[in-house]
Figure 1 (spheres, rainbow, N blue to C red):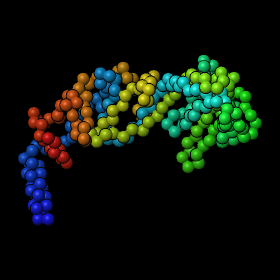
Figure 2 (figure 1 turned 180 degrees about the horizontal axis):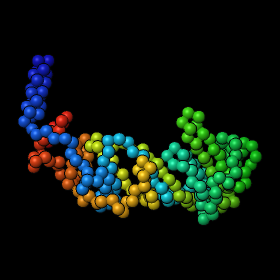
Figure 3 (figure 1 turned 30 degrees about the horizontal axis):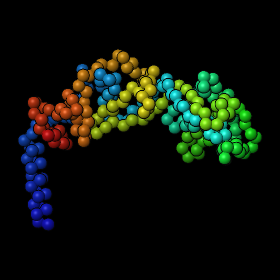
Figure 4 (figure 1 turned 90 degrees about the horizontal axis):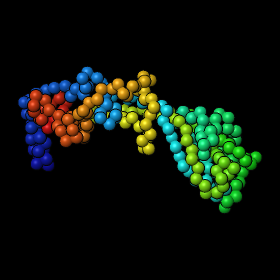
Length: 245
């Protein structure tokens, strides 16, 4: 117990000594040539901010290639949790206007059992959709069903394509910036239009920072992934709250 207290006292004394000897600076300036928004050589966008930003990716090309079930139906599930519903969807090259697809009131009107379609209510032979809104979250989920006449039968692969707008609320990292790619999802579908907090961003006109910052363990690194931030040529310095070394 005494040793623990002694180590605590020694550690506190060292921090106090360093705080008194090292130069005090504000947090590193992460702007580039005065710009708080810029990009790197790969078009990744950096936003210097202390608050959450709403980032909207518009005109994102989405493609899916699902297989039909044993009854010959393909179901496409859509949610408006982070994206408005597309206005039109193409299935195997034929476009359907989402607002014109017949709506079936039943929550789960169809299921396939041992290759036989079972229905709640009237059997459907054409494209149809269901729509359910969560009363607590106000999130709506749509399921669009493509029948055998469109899919070609059981276990056939279809091609679904549509254009989407994706909205993400992104908080800055511990170093005070947001790093966002120009692609909107894991499939790396590039966005035709990108906006931040409602303001359209011209990606081509953003300045290119050849040595953008990196954030590792809450410390800002500049120059490269292995470089260390410095102040006055020293790699050991302190801010008003932290010591960097």
